Image (cartoon, rainbow, N blue to C red; front, side, top):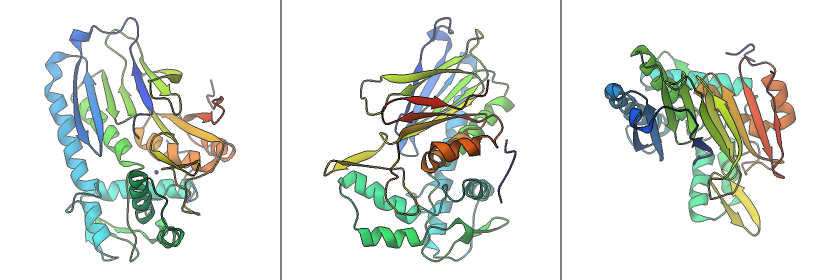
Length: 322
């Protein structure tokens, strides 16, 4: 997917029905709570229901590997080791390696060593209270992806560093689910991991899936744009997903890793359309942090990746090449 490899939701996407789609009775869906969000998998043949079981087994498996709140997960063990090497599952080593690639690609805008800082702001959003500046500055000091070391399945970090895979895990898991379904000859599926939407093929009647992009800060499901896609991933990061207001200012969850505070620019959301959901997940927040001008330059070096930028005045700009 990458031409060049130079050396971070609630529901930002809305699934829309389309005329000519398969009858409701022919589709089967299942939802569950994983990764602190509701995920939904939809297949289009009732005789394939057993593959929903397989998808949710994968969800549980990877939550047990990647979670920061499950005490014996791989990531929790790394975060508790204070720099000592930890043996992890092969997939955990793989997602960490991919994360480091995105860190290099985005000049550090994407960095899974953000855990100390991200946990501060997760707590701040729950309490609606800005963290103390000195605590934020101390957390920023721990962010440095170059300190993460991987030797086969052994992973270590700098002492005091905390990993957080929240900016890439759902995309990675969605891709694993799609691969599992493809191996079992499923031709049509809709994978929605808390707003990270990945489509498999087209609908049985040949129509594409309609994905609505939420209008920022609306509560009634209003969309600002709609995409018609097949066999593609659509992922959005936006300031309106998780935030609180203090003294008239919005504090959201997209963090500037240099200052430690929510990034301030003219964007309210960035949507990535890509072949792989891993790419969309990692790039959506990274490109938001880069800002549109730098983000456009980066996208030029990527195959089959496009973006929709929604500005604070609700204007849109897009990078579609065709």
